[in-house]
Image (tube, rainbow, N blue to C red):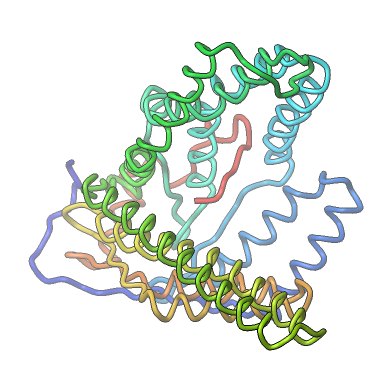
Length: 384
């Protein structure tokens, strides 16, 4: 793609710094939580803006912080749209499986367009050095990457509810042909999950723009399948090891005689096992995906490099889960900040020209320098 800016061979490195603290975010988080509960969820857009502004304004690149300019009132429309889908599906499934199926079809048909609108909204309301980013992906590409996985995941479940003999979406025996079709759909979804993820990430990371600079994603699909295959292997090994340890623990416990201390230890071992089965695969997937996707995102002028260490990140997540458990959830905002810091500060921006040249070019040539107002149509916003 044309960048409009000459490239040189010298590479300049720009680390990302995250200066948020757990104590500051805790105050924001607790207020957001209470006001969201009191308003029955209507405060959610204001809560999200406060969170995003705090996180963005504490994310620094080359001495300048990001900023978020989204308006909560516009984001409220997106929240109400999402809430309406949930209510219609929930109510419909209680009265008629066919109504729930229609709601699922509507969701599958509209979500790709809303997904694109959400990406445009987030990028158009994100700035660095006073200049807005843009998302350039079109609607057809959004449907191309989002429609197949949504249809394979949601429609079989909705069909099962609609055709259940009990009515009202209740489970029951299905005709063999329908059961086979549903099973094939779910099997196809899980077999193609890495491919679907690759398509979605390529759509996202291949359409970020700042001025005339647009990124592209060059991640190899085979590498992504390799990550998922290793993830399955890690999960199976963890299950076997923990199952063996639990069996030996119970066996020796019976021989030694059971007592209150023994039952307490069994419960503790069970909790540790559940956490291990959750933390290890999840951390492995997060680290490998971040390092792969961001390290393959960029263009001829700028690129990203992510080197998030798995061992350190895994230790951090173990610490976070343990303290969240011991504090009955109050450590949550500290865990969020610690995780975000580890993820962001593992990423480095590398450019072949100075950032001053990039921003000067963007200010003169980019239609997104003043923001993409079309992205405010729904006010949809999602995490990226």
